[in-house]
Picture (cartoon, rainbow, N blue to C red):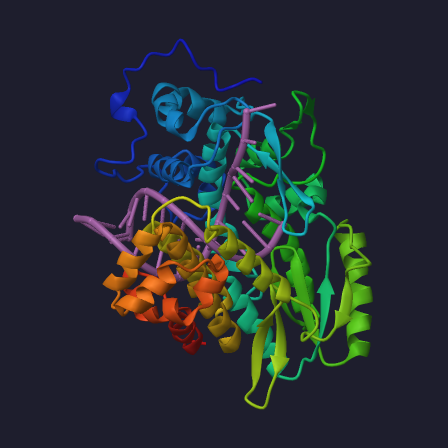
Length: 462
DNA sequence: CTATAGCCTAC
RNA sequence: CUUGUAGGCUAUAG
């Protein structure tokens, strides 16, 4: 409710404005380096430094996210900051700043359940981002080399490759730890204790804690948040990593081989028996020491060829170890392409193809790590049939069909015969004649990406 | 290197 | 009254 008290202040500070363009002046105060007691105590100066705030603003703006509880959009952030920048900074510095509660939004997950988001106001996202940029440089370098989620220059593919390496080294069993709604159950005090070990500036610590307990608005009702970090704030991912870094450090201390991606932790061991022992002791560690809720039904030890991690299972052939993806993910792609190629959809063919390419390129870029040449070829053919079907439907009238077929060098009598056919769209789409006239080559010329080529290109780099 | 747009993954 | 954050990839413009 209490907001960076707006109003009243006039707008003569155009030279002080937070503005992306224009020359970038270097932040004049405590400028890196001094990691003595001075540096750590003045962390807040770095947070509110000009350069840092500019960068934070750009990031929030670039994300183009929606408004929080106060209704302020990212486009309104710059005018707001121009008017209230000094006041805002002062409130942050003297500790009187109060974040607004987050907005509760529920989005569906692929498995049908809901994900509860907590969306901070645009202004709060801006401040959280500014804090993030500063504390990230402190925490990230000391995070485990086996932690991959939410970290720069580390991708899901890197995590998968690490898992594969363990498997190839003979760790043929995996302990898959499943935490029940991890982000919602993090204990504030225990989390802040981890943060305090590295951040000594009390004002920054209090600010982070205020964000943690800023409350959540559900149906106009404000509820307090005594535990959990809200999913939706810029700080949430790093806070999640800071807390589970304790797990990483414990696993390292015990000499385990593991990979963690956000709250998804896999420990690789050489026997089922070892796996069961590790599962018991780490479960105890998570519950007793970290006060997290372990999902006992889903936590299990098994073969990496059976348990999926980041969408994949491992599998072995004579050639070596590879990745295999779940059938459901293939079905998901097919559903998506199906709706993009519905006969009744709008847009011209080039637009449709552009949208298809966006999906297929993105999909193959991620899933191309797995070997699925035959599947890709199948999808390729199916997709081209779907597109031929749309084109045929759009020709619609006998005359257009005839003229179009003629233009594609179909002999006159044949063209006339097919233009008058009463077969269904799908039958026609599969037909020899359409395949001959609207060739793969023509579709490629219109811009349709050849998935087989795409796949071979992507896959060859693994 | 900066920016825009889209897709994918994870939460 | 409806979608947040982090990372990755691709395309485009400087």
